[in-house]
Image (cartoon, rainbow, N blue to C red; front, side, top):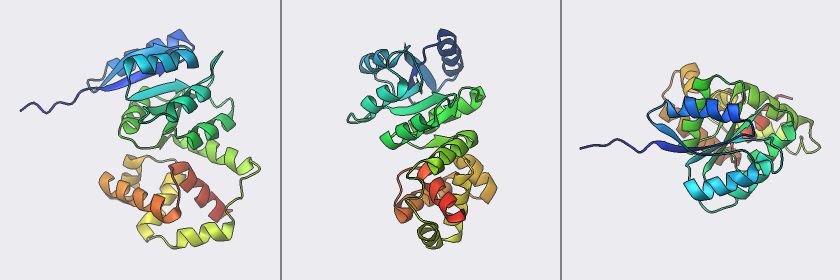
Length: 223
């Protein structure tokens, strides 16, 4: 019986043709991934998603005309949207926070090595959040510097973390360091499935919706 799955369908959105070409070559070189459409701005991205129905959209956050954030906001407001993975140079950290709040599943920097970008696409295709360590540190720093950075007090954050088990707390600290599930599993000497279970518990116990919010709680507790 043939149990081979269909490749993950990926849309690539970037205003630079050479970037799109490089991403297509890297992604199409993988048997479990395939690029089904490209676009050079936000409006074209919306049209490409409607036409090709990708599972994951790799979206540049800054583009002439309609930018990636605006396009992501529209896509993520739809029923059953594709997973959105933002591609950025971090010219504006505020855009990062806006897209995360809207439901983007992650960010990778444009200088991220190709194997990491491929891993990120697969992670988003599985419905999980992903942020590189560099991305996580910048997002947390931007949130900390914002006017609403201290909505959660140090005491309140510490109280929430104190209700966790030791393993859940260790997982939260690793998430705050920007580690993905595999790296967390290696650090803690546990399986990836166990990491996912701990992360699910963190969402419920800490009343958060993504890994960045976990990192911010850890940051508040340590401040």
